[in-house]
Amino acid sequence: MKSQNFIKKTQGHYAQIADIYRSLRVTDSEPVLYIKGIIGNKGEIKAADVGAGAGRYARLFFEHLGKESLFLYCYDTNEFMLESLEQYLDDNDIRNYATKIAMAQELPIADNSLDAIFCFNAIHFFNTPKFFRESVRVLREGSFLFIYTRTKTQSIKSIWGKHFPSFNQKESDLYKTERLDSEIEATQGLEIMEKKTFTLARENSLEELTERAQSKHYSTFYLYESQEFERSLAKFRKNIKESYEDPGKIKWSDEKTMYTVLKK
Image 1 (cartoon, rainbow, N blue to C red):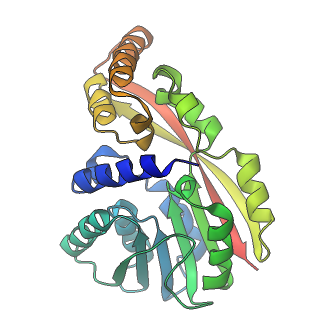
Image 2: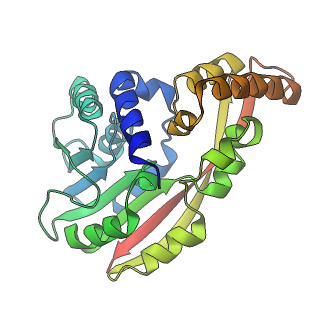
């Protein structure tokens, strides 16, 4: 688990980049379309986006599940991210939502009140056993918790894991599949229905990747000391130039996993 000092530093960082965060991260439509295939015809949907950030996935939930049929509670621990989310959704003419600063293990909502919980790229920040118990409390029977994440193994195979020095060692908070499985299965009232792997095509220039690393689009980069980061970034650039014919057009694939978890 990350230290309180690290969490404090990243909270300040996210506050500074909240308005540009969506441009630094890739937003995948495939997992949202997958969710639509499961609950898209349910009619009115009351859901929570836990770890909602700046709203890049919240907008897709509304786009694919319906602006009129979906009501979304957006929870995060960073007020600046939520302010950016509000502006983003308002600009896209989305009104059926509410925001609140909240911890994942203490959701400010009544028992048995949600049709779905979405947790995208955030599970590694949570106290997961408490979050899973809280999910059981707030979900209605027969509803779903959707967890979209990259596992430790998938991170190792990413362009950062392959080419950025020490990235895999510092990215210690990501879950191994076995651990996440066991924690869900140990939670009374939850059952894993499916684990689906998404293989996602990526393309960037070396300069774009460099800018993302310098902007610390992954909080992992905060675990580097300043000089260590600069040395590692220089080595990363060298590795990319040696590994790809055209540094201006780098193509690779990322993998992520969707957990579909049923509230029994």
